[in-house]
Amino acid sequence: MARWHFIAVTGLLALSTHTNVAIGETSSLFSASSTSATSQFTGATFTPKVAPVITPTITARSVSLAWTEVQSAKSVAYTVTRTGPVGTSTQVCTGAHLPTVSQGTARCTDTTATSGVSYTYSQQSFLDIANSTPWSLPASSSSSSVSAPRLSYIDSGPDASSTGPAVTVPYPASVELGDLLILIAICGVNKAPATPTGWNQIVSRGVSGSSNAYLLVAWRVADGSPAPSLDPRSNGSGTSARILNYGRFQGNLANPVVATSGVVSGTATASATLTPSPNVVTNGSNATVISIVAMSAANSPSLSTAQSFTQRISQNLTPGSGSLGLGVADMTVATAGRSTSSPTWTQSGTARDWIFATLAFR
Amino acid sequence: MKTINKSMFSIGGGLLALAAAGALTIGATMSLFSASESSSASAFATGTVAVGLGDSASVTCNVTEMSPGDSSTGAATGSKSLDKCTYNVKYTGSLPAWLSVDVTVNTTGTNLYTAGATGLQFYVKNGSTSIIDGVNYKVVGGTNTPVTSGVAVEHILLNDTPVQGPNSRTFDIDYLLPLLAPNALQGGATSIALTFNAVQSANQPIGSCVAGRQCNSITWS
Image 1 (tube, one colour):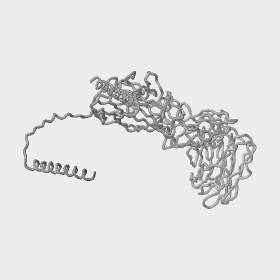
Image 2 (cartoon, helix red, strand yellow):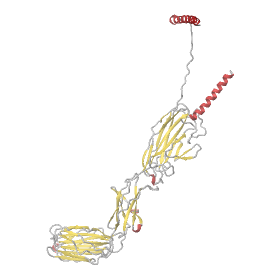
Image 3 (tube, chains in turn cyan, yellow):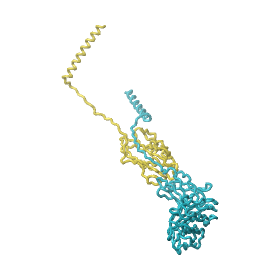
Image 4 (cartoon, chains in turn brown, yellow):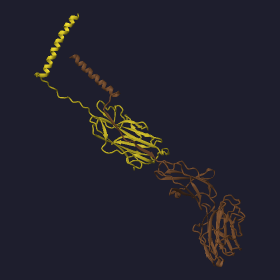
């Protein structure tokens, strides 16, 4: 019996020892496990992935900027940077001028650019989340360079046609104090209309031949004076008159002045095309050169060779018994003393004698 | 010697033949008086350790286009506007068991999770027991330790005393992308998965393990 007890105890000890060791090393305990599905988390991105380049456009008083909208999960905002001479950078489109987005295009206006200075623009898109570290795209490449003129064509007032004895020529609605106003009157007879008080006559030219016509051009700085009253002196042939507004670019506080020592004007015999001669030479930087043509015909003159001019008016008018044609185009000339190649105008229909004028202001 | 051997074989053969004949006779025709008794059957059956689906469906998240400040309803800060993820499971075994959970944070490409304060934060809880708080879990001694992406955090103990089934467990996974998440996390991706473990508690003392902390002194499989 004593021997039997010993064996039993030994067996229990052996079993116990084996169990403990086995749990740590080799045994298969009763166990089970279950793994969840995997939850995924992904950070926001931008579309497109490369920041769109800004397209700057010189407008009458400021620089308009536009670029393709950038989209993301949250509202996207933009930092717009203007780079000027020697790399000076300024943040623009801030405060009340923050970019807005419409139909896939972001836009804003640089209201602090100075005329006559070359600028490039870039933008950086970022998630508009308050108090966050901005998630952004790398800044866009620089835009093309732009330089604003001191004066820019804004618009023309409505045509005022009359057979006399007086016609009030309305101002364009866009006029602001200090703008350059140019009065153009075309008469159906070779007879000068009276220059309104307060206006500076700069061209007064008539033509007789296959047709009779007269071109009067006068200018002034907008100062709040009432719209001018013009005596056409053209009787039944009628006179057509209008006022063009060349607005001063933002920050340009200088009153407009004539920017050439030789205003060009003249007449030419009837021909399908005309290139006014001689070319005008500016005497100040960043000047605006204006080419005006007129004729007594049912024709609308238009640019056939623009020479960097932008056509503003191409119109046929019938103020009285006859028809009158008017063409206006302009361009900015950055460098003083440069001879500007005149554009070539063409008449539709039967050619008539030309009257032309080339002016420069800054 | 050969003769003696032959004689012994003959006697032996006769006895065997007689015995055989008798046996055949009893099997065929005799009814002897006899009795027997069997003990009642002893039954042996194992207990079970098993896990199954929870009482309600789990919620697997697929949160896209996260931006700084986005968070789920139960997150510490942020928008608290997104749905949390849940993992519902149940211990269904009959044996007393220890329960634990493994947490695996993974990524492909840019990681939204940085193991730091400005990367994606996870708040994994089982009831009041915190499993992951931001980026940290607790080791057995209670020290906060960051979860490393791609390395499973194993065996966060869920119970201080053994439990028997059914015992339902709901794991809430809340999350937050902090406002100060750096721009470099743009487009990053991270995933999280939990593994619910149960193991018999018999012969496995809890030792120094505490619920809510990693417990590697228990053998889990």
